[in-house]
Length: 293
Image 1 (cartoon, rainbow, N blue to C red):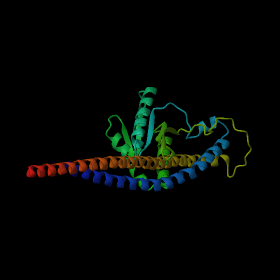
Image 2: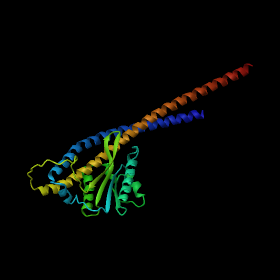
Image 3: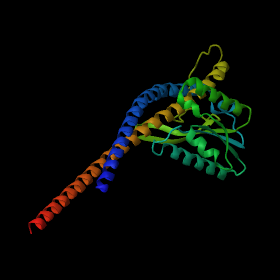
């Protein structure tokens, strides 16, 4: 009977776990829907803004002469790493940490004298890299995921742009999960600064004549920082949606596994219970025969 009691306890435990994972799946599905809508709404605007800049800028040389597009020897690199504050989302965080380490190795192969620093957005990456020797985490913005807004991301963007303009860093890379769908996240590493050609198809643009008001230079001066803010905000939204997609998928699989385990445990419990009843009947029959004999 001790064995039966142990199986009953396991059935109760697995049932409770299944209820938790199912509830977490529903919560993540709700958050994913909102995050997915935000990403889908922003992508066309971000893409069109990049095309507008590409049309305004006359050529690649002019882009490189911009303070955000200087092209010089790289001595210091800043990595902006986006993970989540919570776990239970499959390989979402582990994959970004692995990719960040690969970026470190790649940069070291380029030049062993290049200094690499990290800005971490997410407790999982912050906790990991703060413990690593030889890696400097200059700042963490873990609380940004509690209430992700354009204004909060803008503050981070402006700080990174300021460090780039002050020559504290020569290159800024972003490592994050790009949202594709609920079950697929694409590990991405993008160069945030310096600016590269913003033409997605690298095809020569058809020459167009524009009338600028107030002036072409002033428009470029204002629109490039705005485009950078939109670009980074899109990365944050992608990562946010990808996190909930990964968690929803992980909780869905956990719920399915719990259901399968529950079926096996109930079958095992019924077999053990049947064996126990059979043994009791045999014992009673044997005792009755002994008394009659």
